Amino acid sequence: MRIESVREDQRHVWVLTKRGHDEAKQLLEPKGIRLSTLREKRYDPVTGKLLGAGYDDHAAAVTSTAAELHRAGIGHRLGFATEIGHRLADGYAQRADLVVRAPEAGVPVLLVEIDRRSEDAHDLVVKLRRYWQWGWLLPKDADKRTVDLVRSRPDAIEHVGHEQRLWRRVYPPTGREGLAPLAFVFADTTGAKVANTVAVLEEAGRRYWAPRRYDTLYPKAITARDYRQAVPVIVTTLEQLTEHGAGAAVWRRLGRTGEQTLTDALDNPEGHTLYRAQQARAEAEDKRRRAAEREARRPVCRRCERKFSDERWEEITVHRTAVRAGDRSVCGPCHGDDVARQEAAAKAARLEAVVPSEPEQGQGPGKLRGLFRRRG
Image 1 (tube, one colour):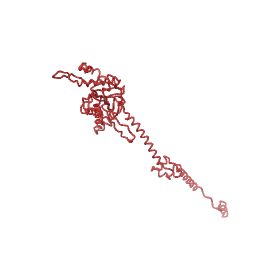
Image 2 (spheres, rainbow, N blue to C red):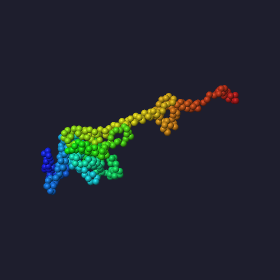
Image 3 (cartoon, one colour):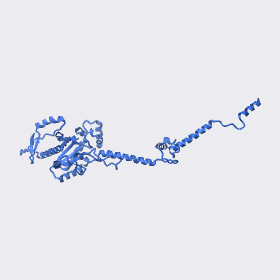
Image 4 (cartoon, rainbow, N blue to C red):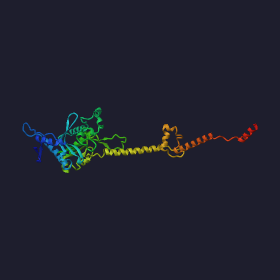
């Protein structure tokens, strides 16, 4: 390594030499740890002075941010990587200043952008848009059917699960809804400038970080928000991290007021978990309401004033059974009584038809026999 510069507070900025960079790649990349690009020496052609002091201040801010996260127990030393590129469809690579992997702290991945107010606020919105676009990309080996679906219309990617997208090939699942989360850490600036920048991010970048309403049959009952296609964006300052620690409530989520701890800021209490609970309650209430409305329409027997059973109600309303339902104004038991009376009357009629009638008076069997004897 070599010392590139010495800051005003006498802290040294160290960088890898070409040899050190090559050895680090051989050591770390087989373990899946990506290495930042080599910082080469550049000198002023006239004065011979080493160039890039602004980069040194920025690099120091990146290192300090990583140090504060590590000090708070968020990330192992080898869980940090700098200058990691995220290549878009047009070939542009959006490089994250810092990538944090701290699954044991509830942060499987966090992309970090350090801003020393050297960039316009709208430039940060462009960065946010690029991360959002990167989160929508498919891997090169995506199946043809999925590729054709996405090409067919712009919003088709929303119907492709995150596990099928490119970003999940690079980073693990976050354990939360949405794309890979993004943090803006502001350094060496004033509170007023930070507030103005955050206001621009919130307004101009709303399409990329803001949740949507769920498409539901119960819009009045569902207050939850759909974060599945959004980039969770949190902001803080390096001064807050240094003073209070990265584990304190120093992170603010865009769209919320007040500051929270890192994991609380990344969580979505008004997200999909709430949606499932509200949807279940809304469905249960709708089922209860429809049952009550149906019960209010249930027919009442004109004879005994009892309510119809479901079977009797269906019998008098379904076309194929209504023709045999008899008097449709009476309930099942009363209809059963009618059927029983009809069957009894029919049975009596059948019996009367098969039993012979009594002989007429004066024409019994004896008289007939006497008549035959006289003829003999």
